Length: 247
Ligand code: TYD
Image (cartoon, rainbow, N blue to C red):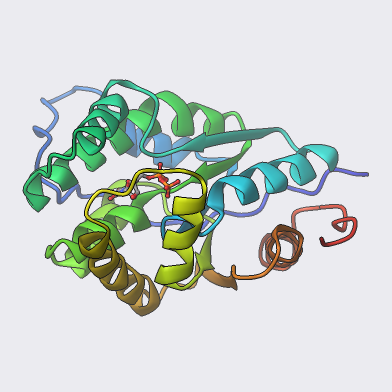
């Protein structure tokens, strides 16, 4: 199958970091994010959604379909496997909760490392990058912890490359939690978690951006994958084989 041309990415000229946790670059020093924005040639796809919405499976299925169609693909995720991501996971495992501002700082720091070490180089090389979570997770989850989600969204858009497409998998909170439990995950404070996730879902629903596509995710893996493929095709013009069967 011929390789489809890389999709045009949404240009975004604003580039003033507003999170404030990073020192301004010294005169003449390299400015990695600005550089990455300029050289972005690939395509950035992000999956977002509540815990248990089936993102990880859909990332893998989409990546296989893209590779089968001849695209150079990189799959990745946040929190990352790097030092900051490991610190975030370790904290989650310990059951400790950070103040929301601090939590946001950790996720932003992890995303900066992700952009510098993984996303930036892959996009510069013209690859199709599929990430399991990106900045909308900070908007929704840290927003749900009481921070101003619109401010997080604005700061994220100013600092990080705008994704070409976000596939937001929509599922009921109760259904998602049920799936997480059925995977054998130990859920500390399940009622607190449910309340938090209801707020996360409300923020995900309130985000209005042209690069967000909402996909009902309560159906079978095959049905959700077919919907994902249809959106990626129609929105980005990326060549993709039709999914074979939907179980
Ligand atoms: P993840 O590993 O994707 O878990 P799952 O596969 O169960 O969805 O993400 C771990 C948790 O981190 C998840 O509950 C969402 C949260 N998170 C944030 O709160 N903010 C962020 O910016 C990111 C990337 C994740």
